Image (cartoon, rainbow, N blue to C red; front, side, top):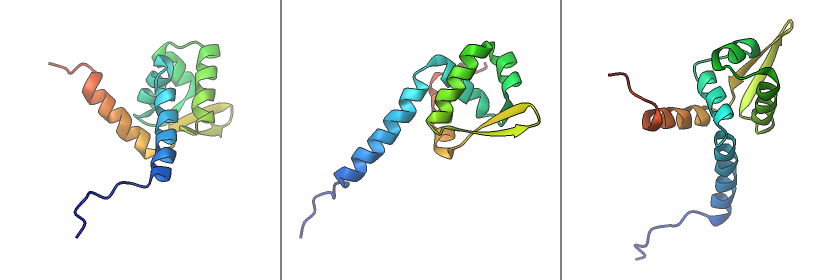
Length: 107
């Protein structure tokens, strides 16, 4: 009887590693990380993100574009306003873990 631990399929592991690496790469930029942290609280308009995070429009647009291209956020338009939300619940889980590990706790 073979009692060795069954190893995961390497092709599946490579695909998962590539996906995880892409998410971690997006999180490696402080502005994008702050944007995702803010969006973890719920959907927000671009103007709200700009005001709350003090990231000016050119940088904000660029970083939101990266998050869109990585499929980490969803967008919807309401009149002239564009709203963003996090598209993947796994990203919310990762942000929650990062918050627990790195964000200051109120005393």
